[in-house]
Length: 127
Image (cartoon, rainbow, N blue to C red; front, side):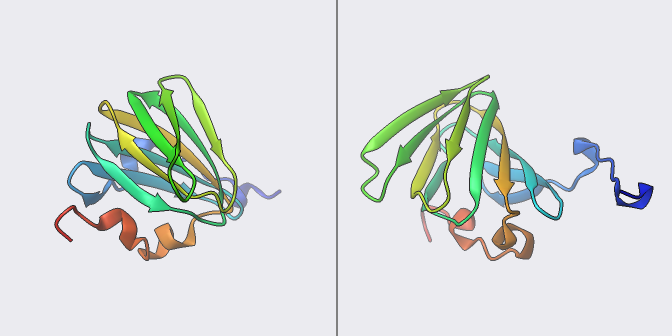
């Protein structure tokens, strides 16, 4: 590994992308993985979706209620200090039951996030 391939990041130096009211993120992406700090205000909903990427959600502050499956029949509350692993292709949604900061890890990187093709995240209740 050459020194040129090593990169150092400071979260506060990364652009904060406001997706919709109550939802923002900062992203660091590499060749085979991606980290994202995700900021959710209490009551913010991430609609039902799925993706080919494996996902790990580590709650740093707050709590999220995940609904799992196409019918969203399974509910899991993930709180500060806890991690939820979502395998590739599993439908899920999330609701912030407290103001929340989470660290999401995606393998491979979410191309839809990198290109801005993640319209499901940008939709408000009115759209």
